[in-house]
Image: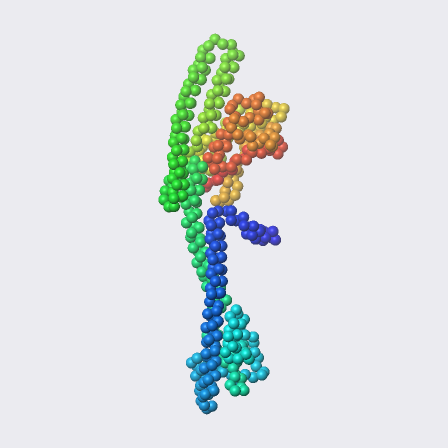
Length: 458
């Protein structure tokens, strides 16, 4: 529990979350700029208005005390009670005798008070006292003399104070909140075209044809969107030209091979020579097929709901017909994915063929192949996990990455390879187009295991 509670704070204070996206980086930078600007503005206003505010409040206090002193001095004794009542009711001014046993609190603690006290004492006398509370009554208290008698004059606080610290904080909070909302809006406007471009790039990488990006807005955004649209059009043209070339290659190469096969059948050759030539022709045809499969694009528009469970069961039944293969299958029911059924079948067949060739059990001519399919996760996070493993000798750990490279065969497989080294490269290429993950590792107990993870659909 202690570790899980500290992880969010550690994540927050190491600022790694700023790398999550351009929106947050722009928002934080604009927010920091706004906060510094607000702080500078508040500091400047405080400095500029300090002296005028001190002068205004001091003049007000001096004026009230002087007028009250004069009124009480020149009024008839029998009228002073009415005068004090008028001062309280109309002006909010109260006058009390100053007693020695009065409980006097210190004057208000703010940046203006020292300067106010100095100006007021310069006019009313150095013995003028100030207090924020007398005998439990809060207010702004100023002492003055009439002959030898001393009095307290109390003013309402709102008459002698400007904006308090809390008020300053409140206004600053409101302005800061509005500034942060503005920063969020600006960040969103900046990030939106880039987010649209990122989504289109991701869709194109998955083999989809994204909608054309709008060529409007700032010059940089227009040029980026125009370049992307042009790139998509040109690559689509390249794909179309490649399809035509592949069709031509298939026809121009396989037609002579078929003619050679016919001539071998009709030629007066020894059985050994005929078998050798037919084997060579078959190998050439298989290599051409691998080249075509590797170069053939997988169109996302051809994806349909594929019952991968049924597809795996059919593939296992076909592989069981081979005399040198023993299949062990554990396939869950009703596992569905979005994809091209023909390409996915080619992936599984390539993995089984790779295991059949290079994963024979030590000391035998038999290859044992395990095929498993399971569902992991729940709801929207549900995944289909497919595993194809053999019981052979596996490959060195430092050479596993080379298995998926085109035209690559490991040393242990060279003597028995009869292809172009594209089988596993075709597997990886097709799975990338399907948005699937492929992991290759040595199996516990010996052998090589391929694990495919795809998003499941209902």
